[in-house]
Image 1: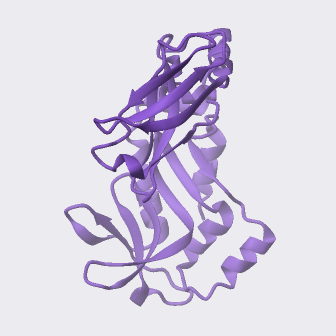
Image 2 (image 1 turned 180 degrees about the vertical axis):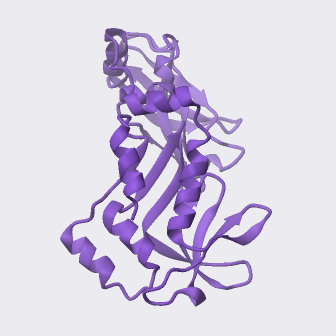
Length: 262
């Protein structure tokens, strides 16, 4: 079971394309096996083998996700559900009323505007269909690039990574128009076009990033930069901003620091 996914993962040399926690430790495995929640055997075996799984990275999104610990939820009609995963377009659930010890259970998906509908007769069928659909979104050329892995950083790209690590910033206030004000210090010896930072809503509804235009911040200078941080989706007072980790070669398209050379 799931050897098809393990074989695919073994062929891929793009490290973040598939991210999994597992296999679980012996202690974690025992907790799963002895859980009083009667989740379907296929889902339980997947969690033991992979833990939390984020599969098929496309830009900043993973097209298929499976959670090692399902969370309680309710349908619009008040029916008890267990939220165990998602795709880029839908949330995936088991219905509590259909969970029977040792037996598989149908998978239901909730989509905006469509409500809750059965998507598969069991977990493995659901996972295979979603993975197959995700693979179709990549061209043959792009899939080959994913299997081969990204090209190493050039010397110029390495200097950009080093330079961005020497920038310092903090949230300084909120502008009249609702943009966030950032105090940015350039501690490097380079001028970068942008500085990528993370942005999320304190309510958890938004999780993304923005790119501060820092081309005017010369080496050794400190400037105030104003930037729209999803103000149409969340109030500025509910914004949480954070440092993004240093990029790896496969992250070139997600860090605007490289825009000048891509």
